[in-house]
Length: 291
Image (cartoon, rainbow, N blue to C red; front, side, top):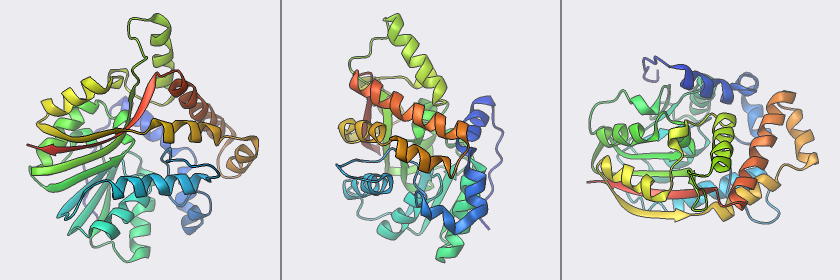
């Protein structure tokens, strides 16, 4: 059995779980049929011309792994693991002694544990329902913490950095893709503030997580990390994801989710594309090492 975490969720965490639960329970119920439409991916993807969504999601995962520099992993924690698609790839590539995935959405965790059994790796790959900001693991428990996109939702991201630093071993590594404010965003501009608040509300992101690259680095350093690299890859993420929501694709999405879930997904995708074009947001891939 996977480990159990006691989760006392506040309203924000409940809102995030509700946001990602739309359509998810149907996915869990249908089991293996899930792979027919996204193969377990829920990232924004890394896009090249002609890509399908699954192509782009797999490319982002390959980019993450190929650029990670990980040679040996003892025990991995995958935060905001979703349905486990990335987790299984990490386990296959890095061969840790154990991999634990944590996610705020129970339906994601249920599916991922089911899939681990199907793949015959449930003894070493386990998934728990919990909040990555309040990690309930002993100090120095992991060699690596990996996560794709989830930290923007954490309440707060800065608290997560400190929690991650506590459970990582000395010289342990934190690797994330994340969404931050772009250099053209101006906090003093009331119009920019309205856009930020609307975007944060629509995607269930704490407004305090709206920071630029310099502050992001400062928060990591304040949590006891040194930056190994920070890559800006928004040009490969947001335009492709936003352009993906053609009318044909929307019709396909409506077959597997409710009208309101599909509409919300489309609005978010197009909004992210707009914000990136304006220079208001950026997508980064960062690797930090515990001092």
